[in-house]
Image (cartoon, rainbow, N blue to C red; front, side):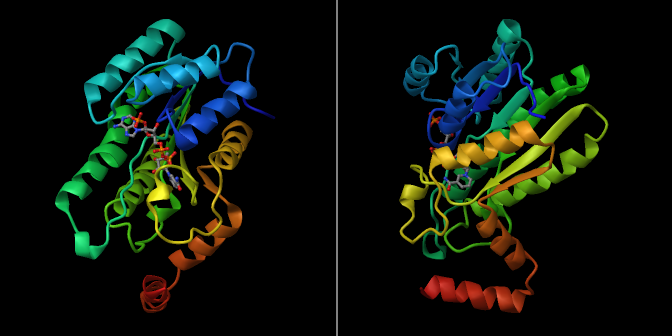
Length: 255
Ligand SMILES: NC(=O)c1ccc[n+]([C@@H]2O[C@H](COP(=O)([O-])OP(=O)(O)OC[C@H]3O[C@@H](n4cnc5c(N)ncnc54)[C@H](OP(=O)(O)O)[C@@H]3O)[C@@H](O)[C@H]2O)c1
């Protein structure tokens, strides 16, 4: 049976996958009283989107600053109540090869992709645990499954998120709060437009949103990962012994 959500908060909704998911929920409401709150840093973009999705509410937030996150959540709570479903989709990506190894680039990824999500989780977990209900979905990536070329700044942040979600999911058993991880494959957005290689199984943001919407509303499984053929291949890679894994990876790097 399809789940019903009252208040849905999408963080990272000004572009790409998050914006497509907001559009999907807007076009396919899960309940008659559904409210969508869209957040990111770019308030102009959020304003344009809330005009395009009437009834949605834009609230600016910079997840690297825990105070803006707490202020945004307090404002949502006072206007609409504590969210029933939160999708944490904010993230950044810069390809980084070993020749350009940079602590500053790595720090910016950790600050946004990891600590930014942690800043959101801290007040959300406290409030949802006190209420004994709520769902949170953290967008990580299949790039977090194993170390991949070009991804020295990005990949470790997504691996850390998957690990964090595994820990929290277990500890939240019987709390009434469901914490899930979303691991997309390649999706055509401004992030992947930076890649200079052919991306297998590349999806549109709308296709990614379809997978996410279907599983967010249709089941309680810990992981939402797509597209299935790509995920299967990468999960197989995850269990290969290092000698074989590195042999395959070195072919990729040379290609
Ligand atoms: N595209 C892919 O192939 C792919 C694959 C796997 C996972 N992912 C993950 O999916 C998520 C969405 O990525 P996307 O490809 O849709 O990228 P995108 O189009 O660049 O969207 C990223 C979103 O995050 C927001 N954001 C970035 N930094 C933020 C901050 N400090 N505070 C608040 N919001 C912030 C951006 O808005 P503002 O700039 O307005 O703040 C934007 O709304 C990311 O977590 C990404 O790692 C993407």
